[in-house]
Length: 183
Figure 1 (tube, helix red, strand yellow):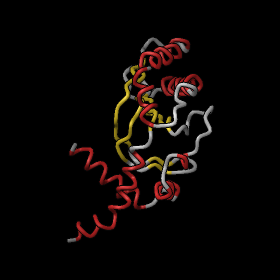
Figure 2 (cartoon, rainbow, N blue to C red):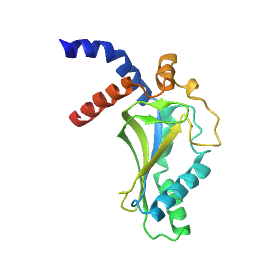
Figure 3 (spheres, one colour):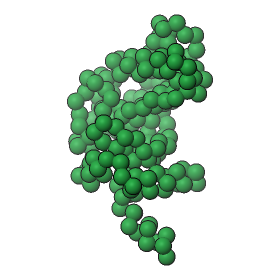
Figure 4 (cartoon, rainbow, N blue to C red):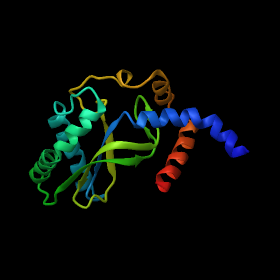
């Protein structure tokens, strides 16, 4: 009975959260290791990616941007590998476009709930170091773009992400982790 009551109360929040995760394309970069050098390189690759792909991801809907990412995996890998080589490292980047689970992430101006998101994943070398992520679409991390999340999310979705981190995000995170493990 308690589970049913809790589920009934949180179902609208969970549905809103899942709607958000279906409208976003995230960038996920994993460093080779946690060494200072590898972590510094991760940030250089991130900056190089952002500087060189802002025009690439300029489409106005998620599906087109996912398609662009999928069709340009080789280009993105070459871009990352160029940055890696220029900085004196000899390992390579591996790029994939997939759906992957993310925990709740608090940004400066908003909070994205936990969930399974479309993602451009860049693994540098072994990909065993701490990661960095942002949003490619809507273009929060691509500095050349000026789109607003308001253009793509409903009022309820904007309210959820602008509330800051609250206990409801922890409940969403627990639900999404369980769902992810079941799938």
